[in-house]
Length: 467
Length: 61
Image (cartoon, each protein chain N blue to C red):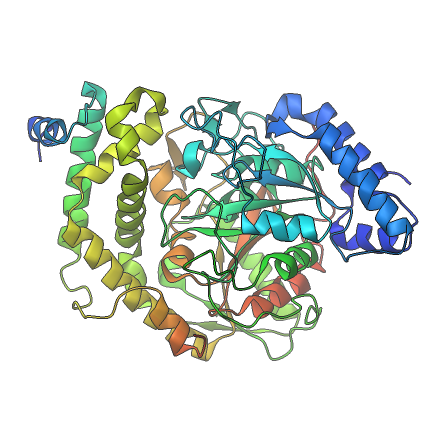
């Protein structure tokens, strides 16, 4: 069977269950694709080719004996390298942790491997996930598969690049200000940041405790639902884990949107958006209407303060995580991350508390909006991927600081903890544009359903990056 | 906050900063000050903070 690496989990699962293909064939295909592509992309920090092949042979034996575990059994996946896997070097993309070998796996890794998934390796990221370029000074820059001179986004840049080029079937990323959705947008993949507390963070290196999330970066909305089915649920080892009911997130996927109410917030989410991005996102919203949804303007007044709240919260919390090393071995940080940790020293306790008050108001404003609409539709990022090394971006001809603007539309999802998904909604200048869909707390089913319906219209027209 | 003030503040905490970063920190300090000023008229402080509130509001403990 041709191009197994190019298939989705949803396509591979039935073939595995019916014993038409073997996990060994899929793993071999993914490894071959990685051999061919990763010299150009630098998405992997470490590979587990031999261990993955051994795990594939075990999965093959189990399936042949009738011990099929479910939709992830025999599926190759890769992990962002700030997610611990027992016995596997987990670098956090840093020099300081370059030799760190965890003694236990993150809960999400245990859940995936118990479901039969096969881990093919650890993926490149922005150092300590503290940035959005994945221009990593210790492991090399990761490249955008649509244009190798451009960034893949970050911090889960290796995840976005690897999924987009079939070097893995799916990946896990982390998201503190947009780090799942930004590379998903820039690389043309699907990225889901679930509701805060729905997916365990135990065993995942923190950036900003109250903002951190773990979630899938995958090839399709259906695959995001399949992975969420596996990793969602209460975990006593994560103090922020929620005792929320989980469900089969694939069950409600439908191509119908009759009666679904889509919210648009012009004042914040369509302000200062680069023309080609805005055009693609508005076309996607029109497509949602064509599918039967209704579109409504909603007000979320506290968004005007969200950039301050995101900046203060993430800078303060990351400073708390890294301060000890800033004092003891500052030379071992990359220059940009060292600066951001230093910046935390300039904030006051009043800044931090005020930021948390703004988050509370944002919570209330979003909750009010979601009484009137089912989901919100926004651009994921207000501009197209910039060149590697660029500190500024162009928005409608104006120059803007990269970091401030790259998280402008994703940050509110972290501040509120609300589920937010990025999916590709077209190409502009040969680069993918991301549409963000946000939903109410634990409303992943609504978010996934709207995204799935839109995906069925084939906005990308089957286009993939050509290396 | 000027560069020298920042340098002394951070040095007193055991954090050594390059001249280049001092200039960048000075610019960021001004930006943060502007953001603080822009908070005039922001929601008044209250006693309930954090993420738990929204989850309860929507019926999830």
